[in-house]
Amino acid sequence: MSQATRQGALTLTRGHQHHRPPKTPRRPTFRASDYQTDIVHVIKGVTEAETGAIDHFNRIIESTDGLDWVTQDMVISILRDEERHRRLFEGYLREYRAEGLT
Image (cartoon, rainbow, N blue to C red; front, side, top):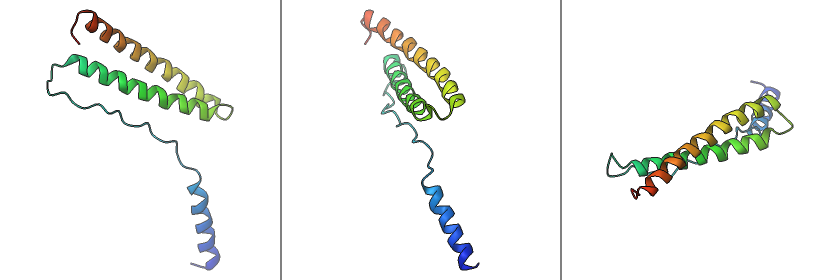
């Protein structure tokens, strides 16, 4: 390989280092319960996971604003689904609290 080819490959490699994919969402701190029937624990874990997904999708929406309308529109649609899921599980948790099961 000639020096010019190596230099071109090095430049190309360095150029790709600046184009990193977006960070993945932080993993929730959800820990399995000691009891498989601990529904409240599961509901809280799902709610935490949905919140993490919502935060991640909001970052994607911000980063694509003005640059990639198609991706942004798709992610907004997914975000609505995630927000609906979180509201659903928050409702389950409220019901369990109202019945004194938390």
